[in-house]
Length: 149
Image (tube, rainbow, N blue to C red; front, side, top):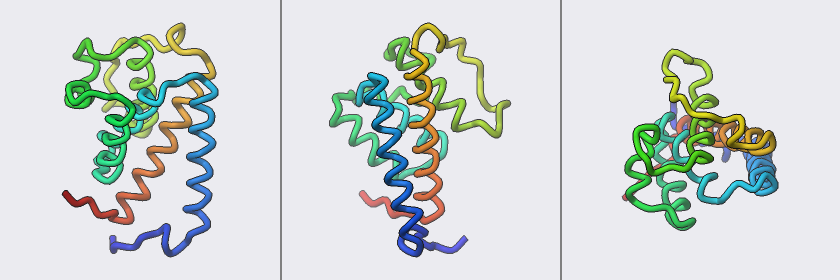
């Protein structure tokens, strides 16, 4: 695929994506999700999708929200650690389910409770946030957004 920045060529859909992302962020705030949890969802989905641009951005945003290097280092194996709260684990499970939606065989049953840990509003908000970051990952990867040291 050629290196075409789809947002520059067609700005209207890109602008709609910005508005979509803002609405999902509003839903997260309305549901009482912490900014740190929101960033963990974005980082985890970006890890699964291999989006270096979004990983760099959202790891920096997570650190700015108070995340630690230790927790970011084990995020790819979050279910094996004791670093993440029940609420964070439930959100990460949702993020993985949405991200790997077309390949359920790749999604391991982590044994993580979601119902009773997150409210319906929180489940819906996390799902919307995962849908949005997956969309951004696809935009960044297909447009070959540069990532430099």
